[in-house]
Length: 160
Image (cartoon, rainbow, N blue to C red; front, side):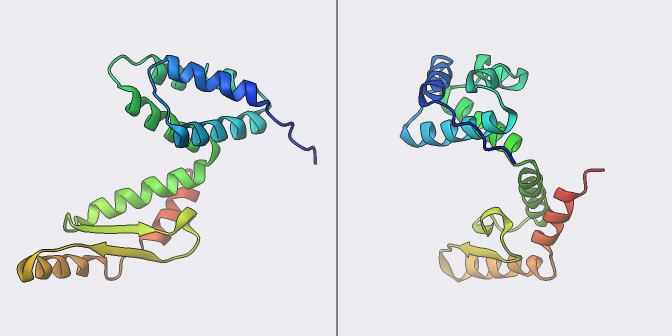
């Protein structure tokens, strides 16, 4: 197995500067995340980070005049992550779609473990008053018998 060559910091910085010239104001965290994703994709594909920015999908994001800087940053991170982790991305999309189909109360938040590490979800909610609590508890019953994680992982691995 060959060891992936290290991507020079100057190459990553140059690519990040190009993203910023396209209208994204990257904070420190965004620079770290996007820089890391660019480096990982570049190593995987044996290309330089600036070449990744030439992909048609990424050029379209960076040149889109209808999106503001934060929107471009969010979409760019999502696209790079999907390129690097396609199965995880499909699982995430399936999980989100299944959750939306349940039509839970708007105050209920359901999250999977990072990278779907196990078959559990965490559920949290806030409420004001007994009536809202009753509505939330009634809505939570929709989760009974649902297989959100199993269904998401199955959808992610079925590429038919």
